[in-house]
Length: 123
Image 1 (cartoon, one colour):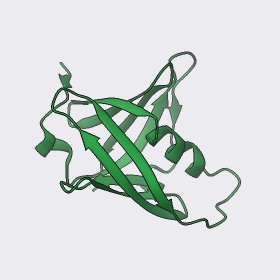
Image 2: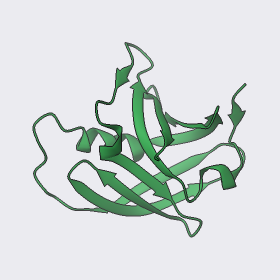
Image 3: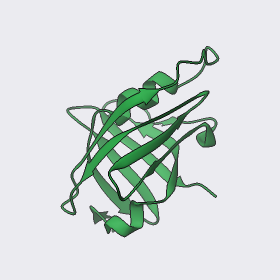
């Protein structure tokens, strides 16, 4: 069973790699190269991001009740390959509203009718 919110210690300081995105309507999309899309939530409220050929940082707010907000504030502007999901990844992170942990994976709900992003710990 999913643990809504999960313990903050379970998600902070972990490098999370993006595995898939499931829109509220439509088929799930598997990310071809999860290690190209990673983030780490630091206990200080900072987020560090790898979005394909770009790196960035921002802030995050997390509550133990399962709510989360991420704001990407700085991102390099390298020209990624045409099939890059860099813009999609950052755009979705900026819209997350809730999180939960299930079987060691992190799930982020994208606000509105946005869907769900699924992450696993990077090795």
